[in-house]
Image (cartoon, rainbow, N blue to C red; front, top):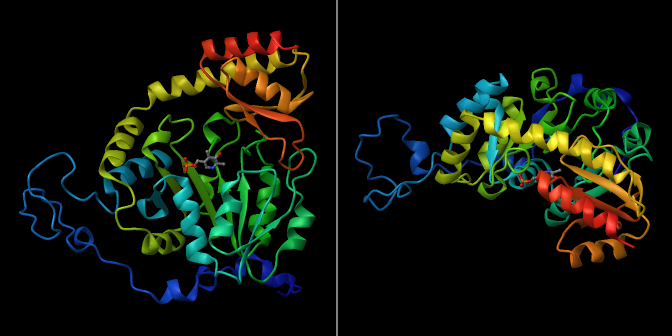
Length: 359
Ligand SMILES: *Cc1c(COP(=O)(O)O)cnc(C)c1O
């Protein structure tokens, strides 16, 4: 692989999504499902086109492959248009579609910045795409010069998780801007925890950056991990490539209905988010008083990373008391760390009581 020497070749003004798409994806015809062929709105029609069972239950028909009601709600809430939205079976499917649309197996590569979300690396391996790791700095911010140096001519995707899992911090907007403006591939910002952060989402920036992809999920703040729904937000020419290769019925009827209901009236969820944010502050303070906790990292997410005296020992002790946390010690820069998800007020009080009692 040859390094890019010509600086101009890295500027987004020469960005062209057609140069990034895998040639086989560019050339192929998308599958046309029965529900894509017939696009009429009239539900009184007699549907004899999809070999479904005609006897009515809520789910005897195939789901809407375009998720039109759901997308129009999300589009109006976010002030973007439907053709800038892709819905997937969890954001894990959305991330996988990015690999399959843009990364040629055994040829292309992506950049990730550990410690970060483990799925980027797993998806690289599944898709036979090299995962170039450029570690975060000690303050868990991006190492911009090293990232710029690591970009090769076959680098297609750059993953930035903000707020970052497992460290909990938001990534500097100035740093992200530099990358958006200097990288000719796609900058993928994973905002799984954005609803807990004081920083604003990058979604409204998709108009300004042709190479920006923002990923969000209903699995964390929105309390719907069980329905599996994630989104990509990007310029319509990026979204249409992902739509072309997605399984036609990737978001099922029950998921579309439930998500629509919850997003339509999200006041209850906003209250839960507020509670989690105020509990985060209480837990941060409480953790600072606990002997076995040596360092508490500030958090913009719904979890707190702590460095403890002996992560393996404390993990087991917590388990014995019926509390399951995540030991992140094997990750880069995370030696002897535990990650605590913020629970209900009662759960958090119990956690603090148990932590105080550990010897
Ligand atoms: C939890 C998490 C997700 C969620 O994935 P889903 O498949 O939507 O449940 C995505 N990205 C990050 C960084 C996460 O921590």
